[in-house]
Structure formats: C-alpha cells, structure tokens
Amino acid sequence: MVQPGQPDMAMILQQAQKMQEQLVAAQAELAETEVTGQAGNGLVQVTMTASGEVRAVRIDPKVADPDDVETLQDLVVGAIHDATGAAQRMQAEKMGPLAGGLGDVAGGLGLPGA
Image (cartoon, rainbow, N blue to C red; front, side, top):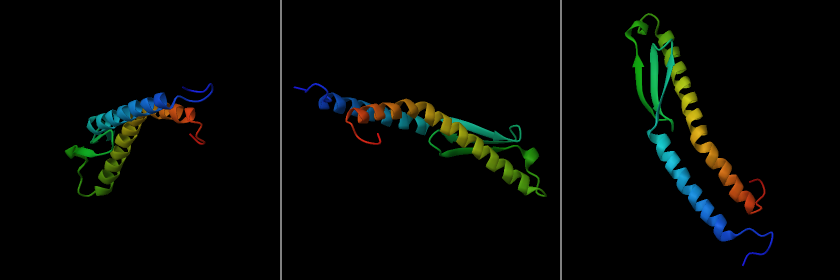
C-alpha cells in the first residue's frame, strides 16, 4: 500500500518502461526518416537521415567549375549544415515530448536535477 504523498513505484516503473519503448521507437524512426538540405538554390543537395547519417550528395554540373572548386566546397558545406538543421528539428519534434515525459517520471521520484 502506498503512503499518502509517496509515489507509487510500480506505476512509475511502468511509465518509465513505456517511455523507454517509445524512445527506442522514435530513435528507429529517426534513423529511417530522410531530410534534405540544399545550398545555392538547389545546386547542391544533401540527403541524410534525421539521426545524422549522410545518404546522398547531389551536385548540379553547372556548379562544378574546375577553376572554382572553393565555391563548390562552400556549397557542399552549406547543404550539409542545412540538412543537419532539418535533422535537428526532426529530432526535437520526435524526441521532445519523450524528454519532457521522462522528466515528469523522474520528478515523481523526487530526484534532484530531473
């Protein structure tokens, strides 16, 4: 029997297990979901998973100037940054609610800093 004002440990453990399962499912979904970043109005595109694995780089031949490799390099970096931003937004969307829920469970235990 739970004392008044004391957390129900079985309920907290059940909630934590459910959230762990949701977290694993969200991580698996992020590993499969693809996002695309671009630079130079689409002249360079990078496709990566929402978990950060680069899957493809597409470069329009118009930007492949052997006398100006520096611009191409900058465009590739820009496209990677754009894709990384999209991946981070996707991670926040999928993981944010779970992170908040974990804090609620830990807070129910009276753990400091949770």
